[in-house]
Length: 303
Image 1 (cartoon, helix red, strand yellow):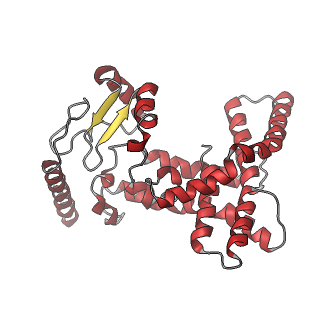
Image 2: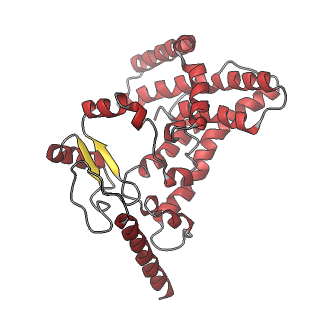
Image 3: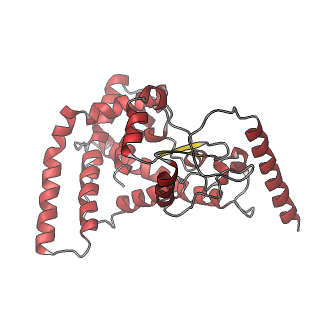
């Protein structure tokens, strides 16, 4: 009984706060979009499964630029490549930043520069990433790509697979792990492959706008996971150690090899060498974190 009363009181407080925030929100001209409900707007209109199908249907009704009234996170959906180009490319000086996500932070995905708002931290990550993935550096990775593609062709010729998509994913995974960490994989059941797949699965489950209440009412992140209705909290508690392990484990393995005198060519080892050369033996935590973040962006970005 007490838990029911507590949950009811919490829900009432959330709705009251959403109403107050909406009441004092500036009245600006907005793009067309589906009519929402009082207080909660379009929160119940966005499906948790394959929302892009609903977005596509709305774009046929409201046009290529659609507004969704999601409390705390007003959202604009772009329904065509042209609309995306006009706003995100031609007017990138206005729209170059990114909104923050409470769920991404709770799962420890906030290290990924793809989710960082425009800031000095983002510029630092982009600078390091560009050092290893500019047009001159990328050409150095071609022998790895050629070798893995040949192995792929030999594999499908000698033993044709019923799932060509799986074979293609294996190529991309093998290439990026070899480039980033000098790791070899033989199949998609490799530990590091499964680790990245599960981490990115959690990301996809929490990236649908309007589905998770904690994105619209931040104090909900502090509610214990045993309280009814806190499925988002349970989900982030499950995925957080997976995300952290995905980022840190392969990078730490490279560092261990280097300490033991086993230096193999990879982006991770090159970053570590450059950082030590620039900072001597006093490698700062910021630089170390920056290096492992950039390596993991490429590692996880294939999924």
